[in-house]
Structures are given as structure tokens and as C-alpha cells.
Amino acid sequence: MGRVRVGALGLLLALGAVACGGDGGSPGEPPAEKRLKARKKEGERWEEGPKHPKVHVAYPYDMPGHCGIAWATFGGRTWKISGVGPSISRQVEGDAPEGADVLAGYMTLMAKDEAVFEAAGFPPVYFTATKATPPMCD
Image (tube, rainbow, N blue to C red; front, side):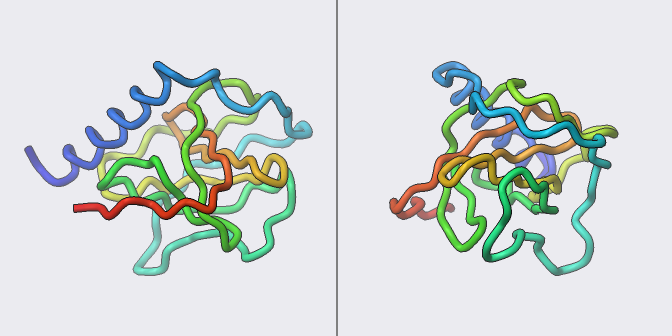
């Protein structure tokens, strides 16, 4: 199995594991906005959002996918996945990216300790801020 397919498989397994036990994400609804355009990671630079994100602002974000997407670093904080589901209305236009170890999308701070990652062709992935340390990835 190629590297691209392994990364995509890891992402789908992470999403499936959380979807089976999650409540579908955050109850908060963002204000009405235009739909976001699908993104691709550009060059060597990783998009990680600002150090102090504003609530309900979607920031370009490159999510590493080779070890699943159970953890994220955003706004100078560590985040752990808390759910997957379509409970917010904003969607990213376009087709899902064709394989890669990086999923380019958008991270939005929904509340002080809640964030959501969205990418074309994937359900929203919800995160909760944590002080825990992410496990090492092989």
C-alpha cells in the first residue's frame, strides 16, 4: 500500500473511531458565512493559524495525517479530538484532496476550549483544548 493510501487510511480510521463514540461535536453554531474554498498545502511552510485566534474565524490549517488526527496544535495550545460530525453549517467547497500525509483545511476556534477542523470532502472534526501531551508517533 502506498504512502498516500496509508495516510488516508489512518485518517479514516481515526474519524471512524471517534464517530462511533462521539456526540457529533460542538453545539455552538458559527455566524453565517460564505463557504470556504478547498485548499492544498503549499510548499514547505505549514499553516498552523495565529498564536491568538479569534472565535468563529476560519484560519488555513495543515493537519498532519500520517498518524491519524487525534491531536492538533493551534493557537499555541494542544488540542485532542472530541468528536466528528456535521453539527455546524459551514462546509468547505471542492473535492477531497487526493492522498497525502497532510490534510489542508481550516481550523476555527468555536469557544475558548473548543475548535473545529474542516476540509473538503471530510466531516468536521472537533477538538477540545488539553494540557495532556500527545503520544509519540511512529
